[in-house]
Length: 327
Image 1 (tube, rainbow, N blue to C red):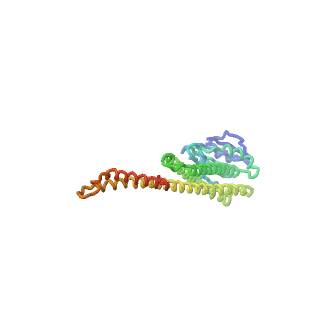
Image 2 (image 1 turned 30 degrees about the vertical axis):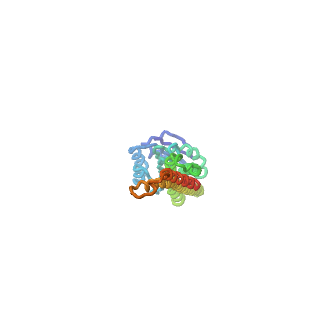
Image 3 (image 1 turned 135 degrees about the vertical axis):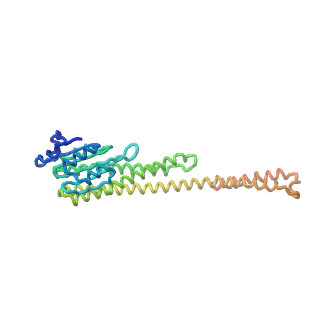
């Protein structure tokens, strides 16, 4: 856990202990604020921060229970925000949790594994502070970085969806090439799951930013247009995510049509061979009956005639089905 004193977005000192947090906040000069950053804090750390800064019980309870949706809660003296950063890894979409307590004199970031990297946001703090000094500018920088990652994620998902679509259109429906079907379907399901997860985080994130811009006393007028810009990015993320889901729906429909076509081809082949086998079976069945008065049984050419009839019928049916594409 790290505790820093920040002025104009730049860290001034890092020698503040957690037990001295209350006094450090009280002794701040104008334009200074305290930043507390903790990665995977335990129960005692959260309790000590709450005791030092008088954090609301409900907000602390959300931190302890985890798996919260993105939201913003406004309490007397401070605000509490839940962020859900996302990133695309080798195993698909991965998410983390970031809890932020913000007040005019302090900013608390509680990160849980896989911890969101605040390095880029910290680099922007001094720049954004020239527009809107204070902790609100740091909160904006963090939110903007998370939403920028959302855009990168949805662009990655869109690219994967396009590849899947092209792969499905290029896929060979013949049975000997059907072994890739289950893997392709599994990839489609994984991508649909990632798209749903992204949208599940992006929609409440938009509500968070809107409420922050409209209802929070921490946000000054110069910062409002920048929050609206985040909203625009979120809208674009949601629209692109919906587009990915539509592409995947189309891909699933195509796969179902291909499967139905493949089944139809198999059924046609089975039906054709069954019809071919039916003729010799019928002829053999007729002359295999044990009736006494069957003139054909006494014919000298009866046996070769029956075999010839079977052969000609099979060849004729085979050529007919072959001509119609059934074989």
